[in-house]
Length: 312
View 1 (tube, rainbow, N blue to C red):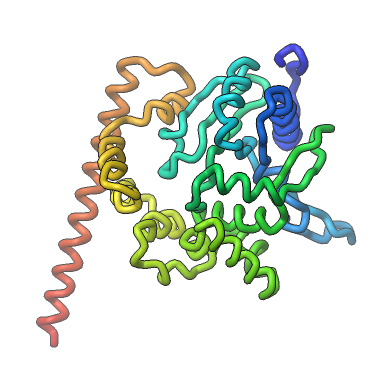
View 2 (tube, rainbow, N blue to C red; view 1 turned 90 degrees about the vertical axis):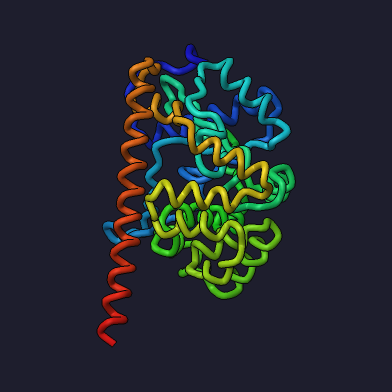
């Protein structure tokens, strides 16, 4: 594939469109089913519109990478295709996020792509979820290539679930995909969320999360939708969200390990022993500082409570 693309400087938006086109062509070659999500593949009616020079103008989404959702049964086939055409895996699924939903790949000319095996917030089995989205897919043309995207309503839900991880009800996608739609479309989105077992994540996006306080995933979605940056809170939420005791133990063990993939991406070079040592040291310092701050906050609350009781 390197010989097909001349090394030249192109703007980010054009590069990402080109990346989507290349990814689809690779999927076509190996027979993998691919749904293109977010970025330049979002339907125009879900984008911001502004009147510029008297004309209604669509404002593209700001994206720095491409995102694709792969049919789980075709994932290994598609990943092999990427590796054989100049893509390097930078982060595996277990390293990517609290949801383990995507692996990150890098290409020297095309940049990053997140290869999703599932979408965070959707609770039914990944294969079942993909087939449901695939059965309602639509076709659009990007980079002179026919690609598949979810239906407009499916895209609304996907963007809302993404918003729940990125600011919840304050996210711009929440305004466009929920606040600005009529009651009929909202009922359709709620029904879709029920079918995909995405009720909790949807609630986190639209400000209704407290309805699900007793659910095991409540803390995790509260963590992301409120922008809580505490790593200790996140790991505690991840343990609670684990579906089984075995899964919870794996989460605990993962919390003790250094995320070398993220460290390598941040440093932009292969890790040395010194990098790993510094990574563990920085991690320990940050964790200790956070524990201290939590303890101090707890003491302050107790003292305030005692002071209020004395004043009564």
